[in-house]
Length: 458
Image (cartoon, rainbow, N blue to C red; front, side, top):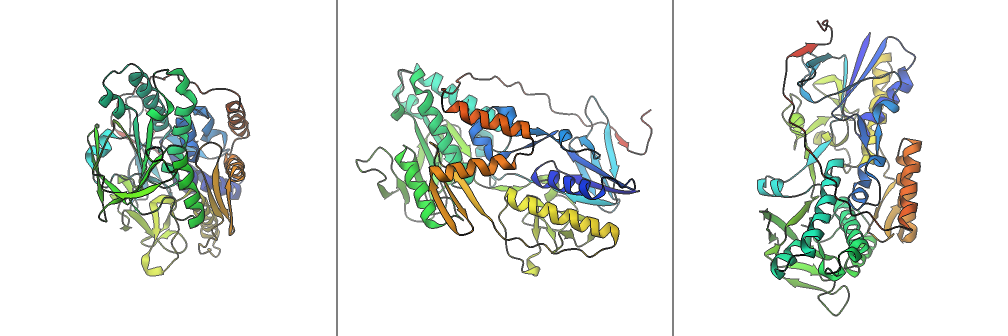
């Protein structure tokens, strides 16, 4: 029997498993195993809408076991990967022992984590937007800020409480800024002493433009709409520190470009000004990703932390190993065209890797990876978006509808699609909920003895 092991339950890992199952589902000589820390696949593009209360939390997660039929699934944290011994070890907990899983072919699709660029105090004091727990914590934080500020009499502290800083002008940062601004506007009537203008959402981007990768016209449209709706946009400013009370900034030029929302009589007015710090108690960090430590510290050759692969997505030193998604990168010596770390590319990786695995097992000819970029879309709040597909640029409400239909089609479960659609429909008629859900953190898992998969349990 040939054993294929896939690591990671994200877009790349799940797509690869489904393709492998379609190829080998009736082949009793092929065993496919999937390992993931969570027993669900998270639809991360909709996390900002969970944080703003537009979509119910569980509606953007789909249980992996409902998608697979004959694939063996392990929910567990990976301890190490041994490509020489062709095995992967899983951590044990106080309820189950560790596991050692052997493989003949391996697919590494372990994704990435938030990149704080070595700033420990930012990592410790900021909020993120990469997991379902992050979205819940951020939503709780915004509600908590409003509750505190409603009865705060110190004007300086009150101003700091009501200033929310979001770092990163990419998809996650722009969409989070727009959604939080909408949420605050929607629920402000429940807090009589707080006016909509008291709350200030500030978006900070280290480069000179937001939404890099979009056509300039669409990026400018998004920027103008954000400012028009009360969001300050600070460009060419990098965050250097955040102690939970003050955000320190540094510009690569002499001064930052600040697009003012309501502090100028002219809407969308911009000016160059030197800003060294912002008084705020809440910082949301969405400024980039980096591979997880397990990948960086693995025995595979890496480039900037990502596993080096050839044009077939194989690891050259270990041809039975494939690396796909955010944790991989093409060897610079191959002169392959670069692709951004998006779900679109991750799924394209998965399809080619699954096909090449099939050819490798059956003795066929593998296919080189190539991909034609289909386009991208983003929402910027208040049912407004931008989209660029096949050279056609769209903005406004039509782009928002396109974004909705595109991502709704990407959700794998039909019942989850209906639930998300229902959430969007109800949002047209009802105010958002302001209940703050308390989260109890579970104890960290303890490592126990490894159990080889070929051993008896007793």
